[in-house]
Image (cartoon, rainbow, N blue to C red; front, side, top):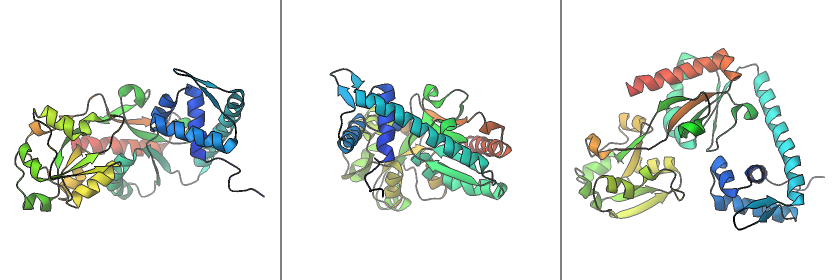
Length: 308
């Protein structure tokens, strides 16, 4: 009989495999979109469950112990078999589903609201959306295409740029109706909604950076709320809890529907993200499938029509 703790959690094994491959908690965290400290805690948890140390931790280096080296070889083989089994199963499904991986934010705010358009045009093509913040190897994971928010280098060979990003203050119409918001100084009378970004991956999403670009001293606002997930931040803005920095074009659907407004008019109140954009990447084998080509074409045409 298997006991509940016979096997470590898959997330712990994935973190260990990445850390062992890179010999770096920092690089493993970047790959898995986790902080260095989060990877370190997961490795400590795994070592505690196994009862043996897996790494020698030096001041400026990380080395595998003998047990760690042995475990790494075994785990790598097991994870690869899991990926291959998943890929084989996906490829043999008769429905020809298109499997898409993207970030939680892009899925929630941009892709999901537009999928009904694709389904209306192509009801015969099922779409399987796998949303998380990890950058996946499409071939190993059995995925057809990805929409990645990254630098050009991180996007992968053959990636096609969809669009860049800029941010501008947004709030609910009801909130703007209750208080005057015509110039940046008026933000002093509003609660400011902040996105938690401890590793500074997106400094342009920070109010402090926005005020600096505007040539102003930072404003604290009437109150402050901090969110670790951007879609939660937008829900709070829609609910009228304060003013947020809206990511254009991710929040354009909320603006078009009237759930959000941009109270400060003029391009001078928006700032652009540096060196990052949204990229479309197709797995080489998947690119040959008509359903995948159809979805990729629809996506590019939808982006082109909205940008135009």
